[in-house]
Length: 342
Image (cartoon, rainbow, N blue to C red; front, side, top):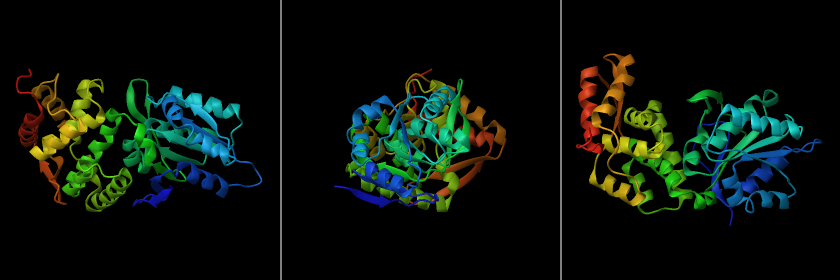
C-alpha cells in the first residue's frame, strides 16, 4: 500500500518520504513534464541496487509506459572517470535538456547524478531517489554534491538542486547492516543535538518511515538553534578517518566513536552494542589521535570554536585556547581509546 509524506525541510524542492512510492512519484513527475517532445528518462544506479530492486522499480515504470535507460556505474566511487561514463552513455542516446536524469542509489550515486545533471549540456532536470539510510538523512537535502579527484576526497562540488527527492523506505530492507550503521550514527548525533528521546526510535526499532520524519523535524529544530551545530563531534570523527583512511572504520563508526567520546553514558553504549558499533578503538593510540586533532586546530590559534550538546535540547558554543582544547580532547579520547595502545 502506497504511503507518502513530505518531510520538514528548508529546501525549495519537495522531499517526499514513504513506502512503495518511488516508481509512482517518478511516473507523476515525468507525466507532469510531458510536452510535444517525448521525454527520455535515464536512471543512474549501480548493479547492486538494480539487481535487488529492478522488478519493483524499473519494471513498474515500464508497466506504466516509461522505458528508462539504466546507466550502471560503480556505486563505491564518485569520481571524474565515473562521470565520463555517464556522459558517454547520455550522448549515445542523444539525451537533451528536456529529458530527465534520475539518481537511484546511495550517496555516491546521488553525487554523480547531481554533478552530471549540473554540467551536461549546461544543465539537465533531475531527481534523486536515495536507497540507503545515510543518503535519505543527509544527501536528500544536501545543498552541494561532491566528487573525488585522484586521491583527494570531496574536492570538486556543485550546487544540488533537483526537481524532487523521493525516499522510499522499502529500499532499506536490503541495505547491509554495515551501511545502515552510517545512518544510525547520524540519528544518534541528531538526538544529542536535539532530544535524547529520538534514540528510542532506534531502541524500539520503530518503522523507518516514522523515524526519518522525526529526524527531519529534529534537523529543522537544530538548524533554527544553530546551523553550525551539525559539525558536532567532527574533530574526533575526522581524526579517526584521517588516521585509518576509511580502511578500518566506516564514516558512521567514526562518528559513533566521536559522539560517545563527547557524551559517554552506559545507556548509549548499550545502544551501540545493540546496533553493532564497537566501543573501543583498535589500532591507534590516544596520543596519535590527539596530535591529529591539535594539528587540525592550529589555524584557530587560541580561539578554537567547539560545539557542546547533551541531548536536552540545548546547544552551546564555546571557545577554547590551544592548551584548554588539548586537555579537553585528551579526556574525551580516554573514553574510546584502549589505554594499553601505544
